[in-house]
Structure formats: C-alpha cells, structure tokens
Amino acid sequence: MRSHVDPLTFKRTYLEDPARVTSLGFFVKGASYRLVGLIPWDRHFFGVKDNAPPGGDATVPTFFFLGADKYGQDLFSRLVYGSRISLSVGLVAIVVTFFLGVTIGGISGYVGGGVDTFIQRMIEIVNAFPQIPLWLAFGAVLPADWPPLSTYFAITLVLSLLGWTGLARVVRGKILVLREEDYATAARLLGASHGRIIFRHLLPGFTSHIIVVLTMSVPAMVLGETSLSFLGLGLRPPIVSWGVMLKDCESIQTVANYPWLMMPVVLIVLTVLCFNFLGDGLRDASDPHTTR
Image 1: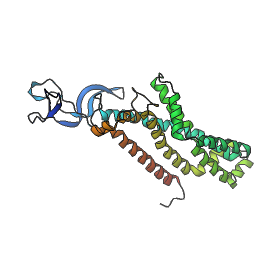
Image 2: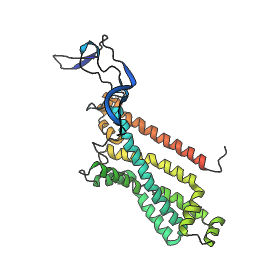
Image 3: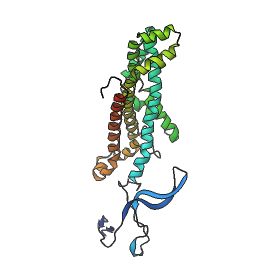
Image 4: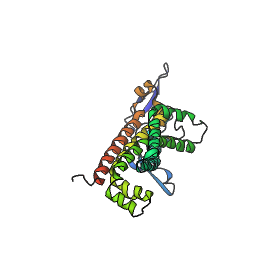
C-alpha cells in the first residue's frame, strides 16, 4: 500500500501497490525483548516476515493483527495486557469475597439468635443500595492522583466489599440445615471447636453451591471493573484494562468509523460465558448426587 494526499482537499487515500508484497507469519523475528522478563528472545507472535523490504526502501512495514488505536498502539497487544488486569481484579476480589462470605455466613447460620438477626439486617442494608450507583460513588471518592497500583487494589477492595452478601446468604442457609445433622451433633459432643465444626464438617457438605456462587461472581467483578473504568472512575491510563480500552468508544462516530476498537466487548462476553460454563462443570464434578 502507498498513501496519496489530495493537494486540494488534503484527504489521504491509500492505493494498492502490486509490485510490493509483504509476507506475514506467526512467530517471526523482530525486536529483541526478554520473555517473562528473564529469557532473551526475538520471536513475536505475529508480524512481518521480511524486515528488509525489496527495492532498497529502508522503511520496515508494520502490521497490526487487530488494528491500532488513535495513538498507533497495537490493539491485540493491549488486549492481552489488559486481560491480566481485568481478570486478576475478578480473581483477587473473589478471594476476599470467599473469605468474607464463608466466615460471616458461617457464623450467622451456626450461632443463630441475635447474631444471626444482626448479620442478616446488615446484609439487607448492603443489598438495598443500587449496586452500580454505589460502585460509582466509591470510584468517585478515589483520588485522581493515586498511583496505578493503589487504584488497582482500591477497585478490587470496593468490588469485594459489595459482592460477599450473596455467598454469605447461601452459606447461612445451608448451615442452618446441616447444623442439626447427626454428624454435627456428634462432633459437638466429642468436644470439637465451633470453627472446626463449621469449616471441617459443615462447609464440605455444600461445596458445589459455593463453587457455583464464586464462578458466577467472577464475571460480575470483571463487569464492575469494566464499568468503572469505562466511566473514568476506575482504573486510568497508563494502566491497560478492557474497561480503559473501551473508554475510546464513548463516541458513536468513533465506533462507526473504527469498529475494531470494540474488540474488548468480545473478550468480556467470552469471559462471562467461559466462567458460567466452568461453574456448571465444577458443580457437576463436585456434586455426589449428579448422575454420570
């Protein structure tokens, strides 16, 4: 391809140059770098095979696998880098959600009485707030001059503190049923501690339900980070995440002229579907009553 600029309108057009053929391929040689920061390497996933184009032209042709953004940055590379942030936010938030949900829900269902009533009223108060506006309020509170790492952990903590109530309700309901079973009563009579009864005897009885709730929560966390970053209240450049990348698509004209900038949406949809399928598979594998 060669470019041509109209001298009257200054409009740039691109014309095909059949005399110049650019070969593309996978795992081609290119600029040197360090694989995982340790191993010197010069192979790239996709690119131009011939570093020296014919005809003595010193310009090395450049090919972007999924196009480029308005700054000329490779969209495919940014999608790969952004997946680390977007997915890790969901996974780290799930760890905190699991700890809070299992602990608070287990105490609520096992102790009962006034403790159970207080915890359930607290959960109802948290659930009474609209989730998206509450996320936006927390995101707006974060200082704009915070370093990227602090913003990352703050977003993860916000998503975790608002996502544990569903798991706590599931754990509480199951423990209310199982705490009166014979094996739980026998463990109490043998002198087992309350913590051992909850985490060693009761929780394994409904592992499949916990797995389903957690795997369903990961897409919600990813969507929460994407929403906050898209609105400019979450992660901000130079951090690369799917939500930060989608911020370039706020204008309908941009989407109409550069539709490849919507590629993060495809990955978000695939991520949600994959975690849903993973949850169904793990539930079937861990449920002893499943017919195989």
